[in-house]
Length: 389
Image 1 (tube, one colour):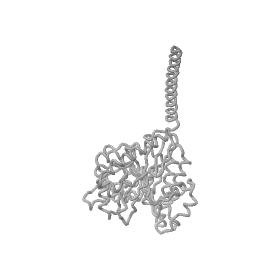
Image 2 (image 1 turned 90 degrees about the vertical axis):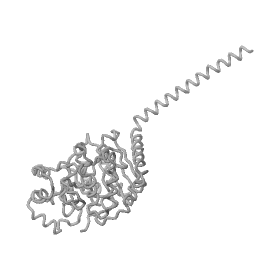
Image 3 (image 1 turned 30 degrees about the horizontal axis):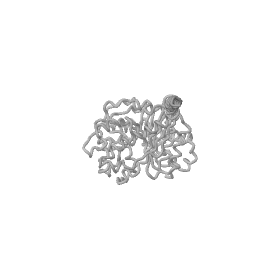
Image 4 (image 1 turned 90 degrees about the horizontal axis):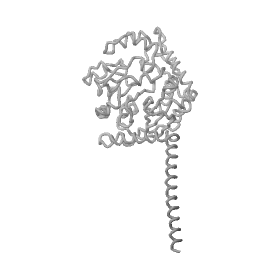
């Protein structure tokens, strides 16, 4: 009787051990199975969470500083569409500032960049810095590009909330200042910033690979080189901030973000707002982009020779500018008068005057902008939107 009980207990112990081993084996197999799923099927979700983590970690680091707290506290990611499974570090990062008044201009600029990129090599992440009152249907307009270019595009929308809300400037909206904050919450090393009035005619990947050579920022020489003379700096590197390559990493390391924000806050009467701030604070560590990247929309070759060459304070090769004028990679429509999105612009005095100039490019720029506008899903809306001026 005693022998039987011991035998039964021994059998139970054997089954118990087998049961434990089976449970462990099952858990191991399940762990392997979920690891497999995690690696190959949820890769995009992991990267999304990884980016969120980096974003909040960077923002928290700087929002703990009293002066920066009011600028950063309420900035948040409002929409994130991860389309491609390529490592995020291999993307070209572009930031643009947006409010409800410039949605169609941004849409056309993005369309031009995506249409002209290398579809096999170039992957673009657009970081859209949105005003707090941006309408949801305007977000959807930009998201329409995700369906059109699924393997070349990712868009991250940031709600800039009340950043710079207390800064009042009669010449520009608060959105013009948003780019000054990018080193404090976008966790990457460098970024291209574009104004909405740009057309990208070549693959932008080449511009992204230009070396900084210890500079904080690279941009194109502007005709208003005298703009910071009254601040005590006679610069020969005064750049236009509409097309720039920003060294976010160096700005963070050297704490230059503090000077940028402080100047923007305490000098609210600046005519060229962020552009003046950038040129003053980052001088002399400002580099010059090749002219083809962001060439200003000169009316003609004569305009370049008679105006641009005389106004900039740097010796340059005229042939390089003329070559960029004839075959640009990026056009900045800042000098295009009137802008292509003005209704009946062809009949304005400025346009009529342009036509009298030999080899004028106004018509070319207008037609080019509308060509890219037609490529979007919203051209009829764009025609209805055209500003009556």
